[in-house]
Length: 376
Image (tube, rainbow, N blue to C red; front, side):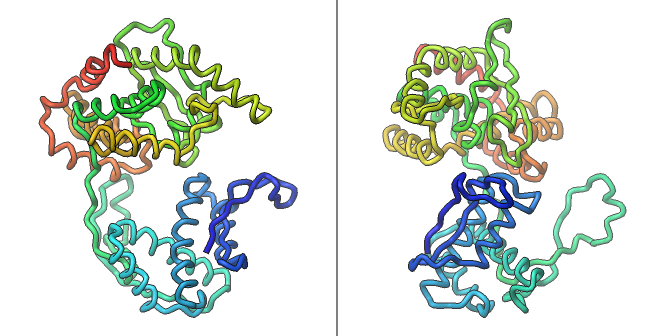
């Protein structure tokens, strides 16, 4: 099984549609039903407009259809038992239950869509009713569901995993192991503002604020415009960046980046507005950022991923703000800073924060900047 993505030459009704995933077998035969669903996800369904979401759906279907291909199983006559075998195979490979459940959810959504559009006459899974706890909210008094939802029989019981975060000394030690200088600045930006790796890699120079006119020691608002910088769900959001760090970013943009941007323009025949470029003058990719973090993890002895810095920000920032504004105020602040669609996602940081003492977190931004002082 192979996974590919369309380029700008792929058009539909005269509109170019690059980046849409599609599957092909080892013999280069297109997997028609899966590809029709992936096209629907990418080009039609309004709730899945982000390319990273397309990639997630594609990765899940790639894994499933690889299992079908390896075992010579036809997609349209698969049974619930056979999907359970695939699920158990993933368990044996050591995948987390939450990851497995997400893959099962994607496969269930695929078959539900096929059933709805007449591509298959039955569903290869059953559901059962379960009771769930729901957050009280607006119009909760008219909810007649009784907290009952339908759950796929194949879904595994899984407890929410706590965000993996670093202590401030470990985070600083990890960042010091990064090289060259721009990677340290990028990591500090993720640690102190909670950027996703897609947002960090795709950060556009046009959203970077200038430190001019701001007082030292203050945080500066940086608005992430989805038309310029990729954000989850293409939603505009903003983060606060310490004055000192904005100065470092601006210094990199003015001093180091121009020669890298010149190399990019010479190679590609066009300009790039991405802030972070590699030493070869290429736009920093997600895989490239992951590799940078893997090397720094090995060098420092502290395992950290790009998302680990985001989790560290969320945990530390929740504790810092809860001292000032209480739990509810801190939850809403961190939800907005991290760009979460639901407060329930942010609530995981409440449990993560229980592992730290409040006095260990007070002034963490100042502590990071102090520890990094003179070592940029």
